[in-house]
Length: 169
Image 1: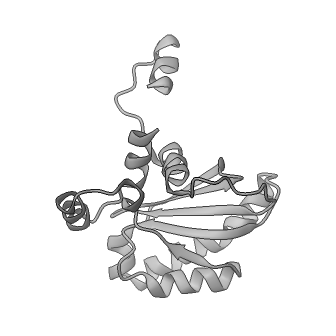
Image 2 (image 1 turned 60 degrees about the horizontal axis):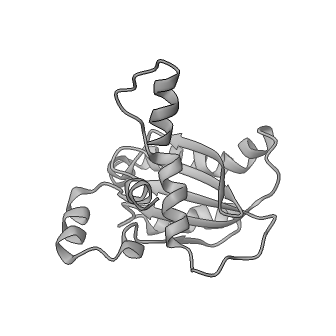
């Protein structure tokens, strides 16, 4: 609502606003343990795989620094080896992109959420390339959804991480 208010005061009437990066940051905040972690120089890469695209958010001490979108999602990753190679290539280049953007720190943790079923081999490849553990997290686990909501979410083949984050913030 705050973003919409700022845009409206500037005379912009948006038809929609994507919730990917800020929603993903809010989702991460909701997914963290209640005790705050000690400040760190290492960055966290959040990878949110949706049906048709992937959003990646880079956080430092749980605050959003950078976001990157890839026009490859779960459907392409499951059906095209070429798309999977391009997707891995985009994510492997991410640390170099951060350097060019003058973002200090290195990726010390990877977390993948969204539609991750069947992507275990790609998660392993990414972890190997980055040299860090990449864990997968259920996008709705921190929100304790009812079984029917969980069932609908799984059947939809869409990620609800960013939307859940926005609704929780």
